[in-house]
Image (cartoon, rainbow, N blue to C red; front, side, top):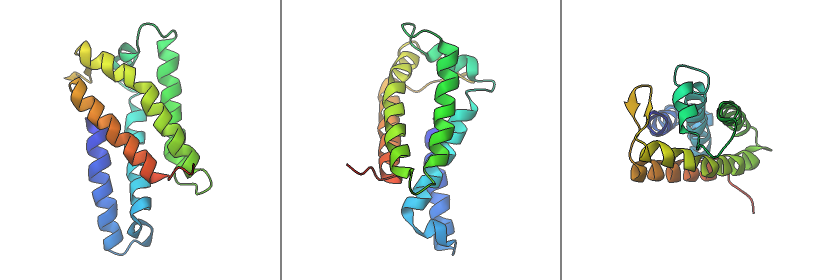
Length: 148
């Protein structure tokens, strides 16, 4: 839930900065890129901190090397957060992040079904996690417009 809150609150704050005269954030897409990046940085921090074991437990059992998967997804989150701010890479970053969010969804399903915790707090139910995942996908899509 914390990444969702960071996404929403940081987007609002970045937009306020834009209205207050920060020209970069006057563009809603730049504000959204920064908000998605903030969300990803928070999410990635859990991959190496106290919450790492909780994330490892979320990895579906059929996938080998759960710890390596958690490390890899954290690195991909960091790369996506940075690449969103490089104009020539932002579309690719958005596409990669959308793919990452889709690939991570089974871990969210497992966490919800098994009522796992992250940092000692229960994860939201499946409907809430699915809705948040769709919002993350939409945010990534709008942050780095994918050229088809």
